[in-house]
Length: 419
Image (cartoon, rainbow, N blue to C red; front, side):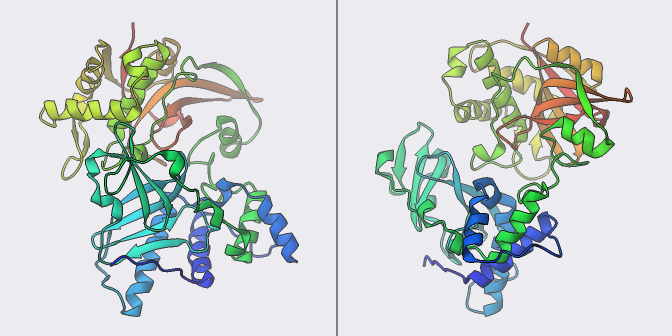
């Protein structure tokens, strides 16, 4: 039996306030919000990024919801109910995430991607699977979600279908979820906390960006935050920015531990963009990724393993994995390595129009992860101190991020050479 439960604003505010407290600093004292007019004015200062719920936060919310429901004794869920996977649910355009289907070992929960919905919990079941599971999972590229129990699936050929397999036109879909968003759906204190935090350069999503051990989106801000002082660019190379492909692991549904194939997908697509290789340029990132899965299967799954012991991309065979991935598009490339990334090596690679498949271990915030290095810069402060950075497609974001080169001494990389 499928169920929908609109939890009270009090419960929603508790969940969000708790998660908000986990991710950012909430001032002990904050200015009074005052009238409802002021509340609306404050709300209007917030953009979608401020109101957006990340996959990690949505998972927290789902876990709290499960615990609350178990405590009522009126659900099939137990303390052994676990999250098995998370599927992003997109709007009618297929571009923006509107929610997350938190798939459990029994049932599922759909959590809104925005906090200003009437309920953060859009639907749930303690027994049934989500309706999109009625389609063939291996054929689904994206799941669209237009309202409660209203799912559509985009297959690998780009065709839009209902969960029953009937083809449907995109202009037939109605944008009903976003129309439900409103300031009155958000607790006043929570809006105040977000506004004050934003004013203090803290973000609900990633309040510690550009600080030690966190995501780096701006090396100048990072250097100032970590080392102090003012920094300016001394030297740099960025020959790939206009051609880079920034697929993330969340773009490829139904896979696990696949940062390696995601990085190789970005390398292949970026090469095709830069060198105008039509067989690659005309292929979607999903299609390139699928070709890599074919390569892996054709080679006895020796390149990539999704589950169990040794899950992930086999480091020792990555060179062959990259070359055979390119070969699927009738392109021959040279891959060298493994090397330890030094400043000079990174400079040589990025100025020489090569791409780096970089494997980091125990890296903050990435842990054990594969990324693509494609540019570098070196900063200098007024004292003459130097700080150098590798720009990467990190497989988490659809834009470039940075890693301090000084932190990469114990890591390894392969170099794709396009001679």
